[in-house]
Each structure stands twice: as structure tokens, then as C-alpha cells.
Image (cartoon, rainbow, N blue to C red; front, side):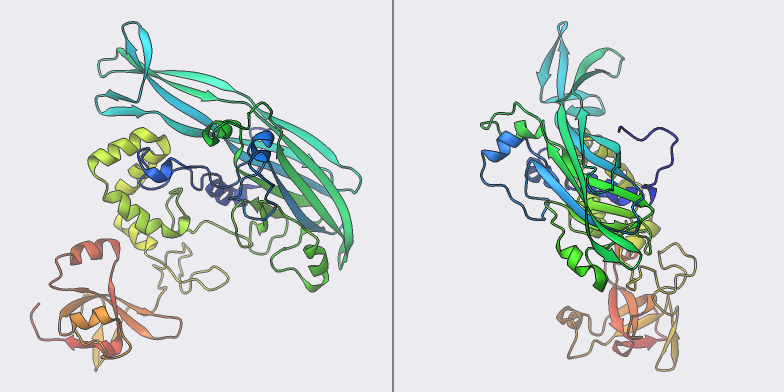
Length: 460
């Protein structure tokens, strides 16, 4: 038991990026400032609150949803084949309260904000990632009870003014976490390759001393946050609980998961890794290759969050940078994001197997030809990027807003084809003052080939 030794093989490397996204999902929401109302109620998934405090708030919720707080969570999954070995990684965040103090007359005094020239410090709740590697028994009757501890701590960081003199300090305090992992295995039938075994891993907050009258903020100090499991096996394989084979359906129905959602992880054909998440997922989840980094606010909307971050004022960005180091990293990444990365965030079509059609260079961004031809022929005229057209939207069956563009001239930016082989022209309107901005981050208007009139001799 313990953390993974430095330099040892990381069997969970194929799924770690997704697991890290789960670990920090909801950690800090746009606009990434402490003053934002939605950042005053944080930690929404996989929270294991203290037992006495939880019981005082009513009957336990035993549903799957990891947004319902309880003092324990249970993962039940199916193993198929001769029992071999299994390893588990229990992962969560430990809350760390950051307070700011000013150096004043030989003493440090708490303050809300500490300004140090270009640097500003604000008190906020951070989090420290914790992970524990365990070897699990797989044979029925070999139950195990494994205690885990994340200790308390108090760290001080002296900060200095632009002249190098002590100006204050940042205090970071952590409270102890006590966690117990209970493991058991039970035979539940047979499959083509051997026995079926139901593996149960229950993670409990076993800390004591938090009174029932404590506030949620106080209880969170003693609560594992975003708790989830990674599991790996050798000598057997995991069975999908979402799409099980016919011979395993009855055994799958016997699995009862509480505040967790176990899915197959790793490569699309792999059955040796499992991720048990407090967030609903599908089998073999992965971070989109177009995403340049996490935003803590749902990976499906990278483009709009990045664009919104660019609209923050200098004062808002300064507060966000002072709120949290991860917020500062997000702003640095967005401020320095090149146009081609923004274009990738605009979207890509993928078939069910997750590949990008026609992307011959293998990087998943579609620049190897995904999305259709570079040129097309309309009314005997070859059109491609840079061609000028007059817009003639269909009178019926089109976007009503497009009717306002009838007769306007536009510049073709791309020629695309959809899954039904219909050709579409991505254009920017020539007299639109925002056309250059639209072109910069790939926000185009789309018209069918029958909705444009080629312009071959008219000046721009």
C-alpha cells in the first residue's frame, strides 16, 4: 500500500489524462475568480463527507450519481477469466485553505488582499491531489480492509515587495483525512473463458470529530473530494457494464454501484483497465485530441470558454490570476493560443470509432483533408478558398437569419462535405466588420452549393 514508487511502470498511463480531468472537474469555474458566485459553492462530485455530519442530514442516498454527497461510495464490477492479480489506485483531492497575511510592524496580520506591485494575492481554497496504490485480493473469501491516511499540514510562504523586502506571507493549511477501503470478491457464474467474479471496492470516509452542527465548508476540510478509482487486472478481464455480452447480462444486473460509474478505460479494444468515476461516462473515454488543456468547466465547450476568457478585462484577469495558480495557467494558455488551435476547437466530425474521417496526417485535427473537397463546381465555375460569391439563400427550409444576407457578397473560406455527401461553403460576408475576427477563430456562415452565385468578373 502507498503511493506509486518513482520510476515504476505506470499501468494507468493510458487513462490518466481522463482521470485527471475528473479529479479537477468543477475545481474552478469560469470566470475563474473568487468573487464569482458559482465559485463560492465548489466541490460537487465524488465528495465523501464525514459520517456523523452526513447522517445528521437525513437518510443516505444510494443512487449512482456522484453529485449526491455521502460518506462512502461503492464500485462493483465484473471480472471474466481465471483470477490473476489486480491493482487499484484510489485518487482524490485534499482541501487546502490558503490565507493571506500582511507584514505590519514586525507582525503578520490577516488581510483579504495583498498587493505587491504587479502581483496580487487573495485567500482561496486550493486542493492537493492524493493517490494511493493498492494490491487487491481477487479470490472469494480473501476480503481486505485497507486504511489510508492523508495527514494535516501547515505551510508558510514569505512573499516580498518589488524591492525584495518581506511584505507578507501565504499560509496553507490542510486537515487530516482518514479513509478505509473494503475489498471483497464473489463468484457469480461462468463465461466462455472461465468464471465470472464480482469485485467490490468500497471507499469510506472514516474520519471522526466533525460535529453535526458544522457548516458544509467546515465539513469539506475533512472530506476526500472528487474521489474515484483506477483498476487494472492481469490474468482476467473486465466486462463492460454498459454493453455486456449476452452471457454476462444477469451477472451485470447483480452489480450495485453507489455514487460511482465504472467504465472500461484505455484503448478501444482493451478490457484490462477500468475507471470508476463519480461522473457518468461511456466506455473507453478520452480527452479530445483538439483540447489544448483543461478548463475545469466541461471539456466539451473548450472553444466558447476560451473565447469568453479572452473577453475578461485586465482587472478581472488580475483577480483570476490572484485567485488560483491553475486559473493563471488557463489565462496564460488562452492568451497565447495560436489561431490554428482555435480553429481545431471549432469542431470535428468523428464516426463512432472515434477516428477523424479523411485525416491522413493522423493528428485528429482534420487538416489532412477531413470534411470534404478543397474545391467544388457551381454553375460551371470552380469555387474554392478565396472565391467570391453572391448569397442566394433558399426561400424555404433555411435559417431565417440567412434571409437577411440575400444578395450580399461573400468570400469562400472552405469547401466542406457532410456525412450525407452534401457540399457546404463556409463563407465570411465581405462587408461584415467582424469578418476578420470570424476568420481568425473559424466562425463561418454556411450555405449549400445551390445557395450561392459565383462572381467571376465583379470587383471586390
